[in-house]
Length: 209
Image 1 (cartoon, rainbow, N blue to C red):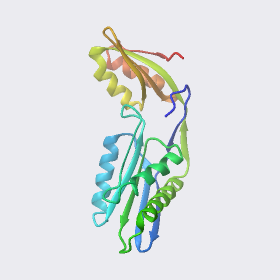
Image 2: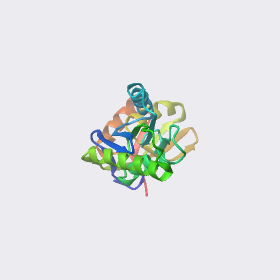
Image 3: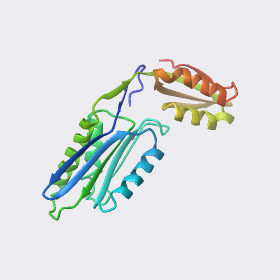
Image 4: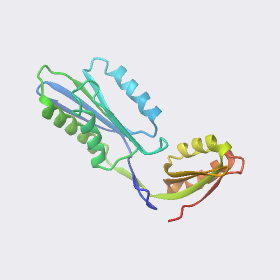
């Protein structure tokens, strides 16, 4: 994720689905907005319950507020690198963040081989990305946040809630300093929320450089 001033955040504005059948196997893909690891894990558990008869529930996510930008993926029992990597690749191809991609497979009795599997998972995930339609591009702004060390917990909660991407961090005396990038539309909300959470001891200013 870029840390440049006004760097855009690209995220799906709606869920998209796609279905693919290859040699009897059915692949059902879904890509949807997702703002946190907890939300992703809850959604995955829901899909596993709903698709309890599936052979594999493979997934990937890209999140910008954990508190640092992060990615994760799982082959969920498929050969290593044949499912999770293609799914995350389809999300990266569109530079999407705050997104969860899931591909559910029902095995059809014919093995597809590593290459065939990877292609099927990629095609299914890419189809769901396309089905999500419009991508929201949110301008971002770099800020410097300073809070007393004793208020780090409150600051962390506020920054996470605002979807902040964390950058450089340091401790200077009794002060914790962190550079963050947040959607431009949320910067005033961040200022107010941080002031309230830290009882006026937090400071937000434009980042230098």
